[in-house]
Every structure is written in C-alpha cells, then in structure tokens.
Length: 388
Image (cartoon, rainbow, N blue to C red; front, side):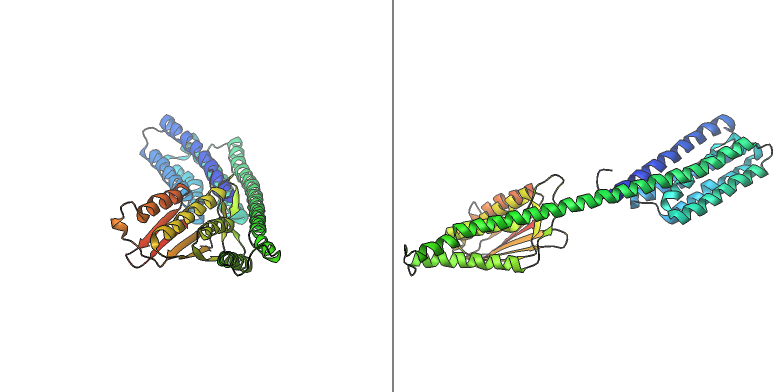
C-alpha cells in the first residue's frame, strides 16, 4: 500500500480492512458448520457460496482498485439477505442460530456497502440488512430478543464505523495529496530559480565579459577569434530568449526525496562545452520539464558525448539539438548531424561504439533509453528519452 496517491492508499486500506472483517466471519462459519452440522451438505454449500461471493467481491476490488457497485450489491443481497433464508429453508429454523455466522455476514456486508456504495447506497443496504435480521428473528421459532439486538447492533455499528473510517482516511488522503502537490510546485519553482541564477552567471562570464572587453578597446572587434566568440554568445542569447518565450517548465516525476532541477541549464552547459571546442550547435527547446538532479546530470553527460562524437567523427562542424517535454513529465532530447555517418552494425570501437556504450549506459542508469540511427553518408541521429 505504499504506492499511488493518498486517495488510492486509503482505498487499498479499506479494501484490506473490510476484507479481513469478512474473513473473520467466514472463519467462524467454518468452525460453526464443522461443530454443529458437519454431515449436512446444504450447510457446506451455503458456506461455499459465501466464500465464492466474498472472493469475487474482494478479488475484483483488488484488481480494479476499488469496489464495483454491482459486486457490492450482489454481496449484500446474497450473503446478507439470501443465505439466512436459504439456511432456514434447507436446514430448519434452529440451524440458523446454531450457524450464527450467517447473521454475522450482514455486518461485514454492511461495512463493504458503507464504503463502496456512497452514503445513500449505504443507508439503503443497511435498511435492507436490518429488515432481514428482524424478519428472520420473527420467523425462526425459539429465537431470542438478545440475539436480535446483537445482530441489529452488528449491522448498524458496522455501517457507521466503516463509513466514518472511510471518510477520515479519504480526507487525510486528500490533505496528503495537496501537501505533495505543493511540495512539487515549490521544488519546481526552486529549480527554475536555480536555472535563472545559472543563466545569470553564464551571461556574466560570457556575454557581459566580451562586451566589456570590446568596449574597453582591449581587443580588435574585427578579429576572427572575437567574431567567432561573439557568434557563439549570440547563439546562446537566442536560445535563452527562446526558453523564456516558450511554454513554462512543468514539474516532471522526480522520485520521492530526490532533488529536482530544471533541465535547460544542464543542456546549455553541454552546448557551451561543445561550442568552446569549435562545434556550432543549433538548439531548440520546448516545454522542458523539471527532473531529478541526477537525471539532468546524466542527460548533460550524454549530450556532451553525442556532441563530442559529432566533432570527432562526423566530419562536420555543425550539429542540431532539440529537447521537448511531454504532457506526462517525459523528456526527449535529439542530437542530429549531417556528417559522414557510420554503419552501427559494423562499428568497431570508433564513434558508434562510444555512443552505444557511454550514452546508453548513462541513460539506462537513470531509467531512460537511448537510440542511435546512422548510415554511411547519411549522418547520425541520437535520441535520448526519459523515462524509457
């Protein structure tokens, strides 16, 4: 019961609790039949019916995550209402009270109805079960008032307590979900602020430093190295503006307790590293999510390796990077070049093997995946996906 939202965990707990309540009544039934009517096939048949209905009710609830209304009503009508009359018809009046577990089933049926049918359905089922207990008491000869009061109290108290427990757990689950949502939102805001600070530091160390140096007249603005540096920093500014103008970064799916970070700064670090080594990178970003810090680090390293492969093996000075977030917090990063390409099946230790081993290993370590597509003369395409 550790996974899922607060509401889902509350539902799982109530399925377990009411299931154990029913199991206790069925255990009493086995002991009672074995003691009082061991040679009566009808008694064992009634017990088997109760077990079958119970397994169906709780089996479907476990499989589907919650009680199905039709199965709850089936349980109420069969175990809570029909089986006492079946025992009276097949075994005789005294056997109903000798097998008192039959009446106890009304209590566990009312508890399942209280949580699975809503307040109106719970009230209707409680009235039906109370009426059954009263009618059986009136019809069965020799029945006693104390037994009637006990059965009526079991049905009523089971209904009320199960509903109160379910209301409380559902409320606590909603509060827990709200707290988790606020924590994710706050962590996403912190990550975006950290990314802005990283961009501010990068602007100070690159664009502002270059402009200050040119303004002071300490370098020739027309010199080729200065123009090349200005071109790289202009490309960085365009990417930065593109990120600010695009869709806001969305929270991804960081693991519990994992520090989150905006992935844009990590990708920019990889791009700037490649540009410093002379590779031109045209990058585009769209709706980047917030991801766990180790995911951002692995993506940065994988992109660096892919860009290094372009610079070293592709025979071209330009690469194209795109990164886009999905609606569910997923992220896809693609690095493409129009260089020499290679045959992935025949790679023998050059760029192809480096991509497969280094990039694939990094992505697999964070629960992601990588794909490499290439052909001689057709360039190379590396796709990184998180989660896989």
